[in-house]
Length: 395
Length: 70
Image (cartoon, rainbow over all chains, first blue to last red):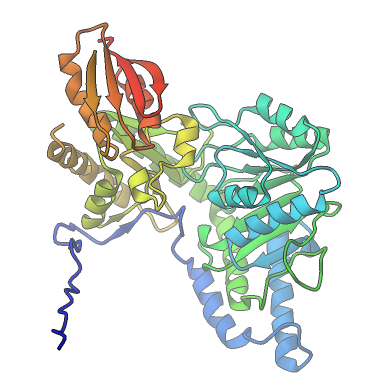
């Protein structure tokens, strides 16, 4: 006879929200921005109207094809590229993988090496690891690319492709894309720019051959990535499929998502100049006030050449995970590059490459719905939260 | 030499151990931190920079020397 096992399925350490003083404040737009109202509207309409396979010849298919072509034309116009240079993929990650692996495959005759900055998104690093031959170029303490090392790197024989993030997704530091692109052009190496954090927020300089982005970073729906391959760039599909020379999604296109992404990108770009100024002022306020009100804190990244909506800092003697949970209890959603918050238990490779403090790390990223009052409430709560965690650690 | 054994302790604990040990280190002397958390390699030099102490390098894996300057 077996005694029935009593399983304790209560979740330990469930975070309650008793301390929460007001409405929740979402400050992690760099992971996913809240859905833009235009995206929501377009998505709901497209769910009724754009569900059919656009490659079919019946009326519903032709309607879907019209919608796809209109969305493609809209995004192409927003980016200043030709519609046939643009492909929608299932995510920003898929777009990065297609850019890196396809860009390398297309240049196999020139060489094998991918040159990339040390602060690329992990999607680039994973693609580089799969490929097996990569050369990393470092950054300074503020997270700015070492351009001399980049120049030397792309000039080395056997370089097939270079990858550079337009602005760091963790530190916010803008990268010298125009200068890096010129060095690539001089060396005859195509440049992939990962513009996921910049698109819709801050202008992306020209000069690249491949560009990838992700709709949910600008307020579009999740599950839509963009890949642009400029005319004259060699690209060879790393995936099984019909067309080896032109990127395409593996399987059906998420057409409602694409339509919502296109509509919201146009709307976001229309607001971008005003939002860029407004959010830069708010993040500037965070940078200054955190420095004044939290002792032993390191504000990370370039204070001037940076994304308007993102600010990162690290608090000495503070466990990043504890800080995230404590802020969540107060209603504030932020992210962290500290090792204790990563599945790998390693600190963020970006913070490591910059040589800045990696524990007690908080990334705050704002969006169009973030108000000055939200930021003030966060700034009012933060010093006490940090002080309590330090006190518990005996510091 | 004063030694701080933070092996098996997760960041930020090795840095907290170091900071707590510092008052017992004479100015100009070295304190050695033993830490196996991978973040220590990054965070001990960063702590030295923030607290104006001298990072003397890592003589062996998981071993970090810090000179008390102030």
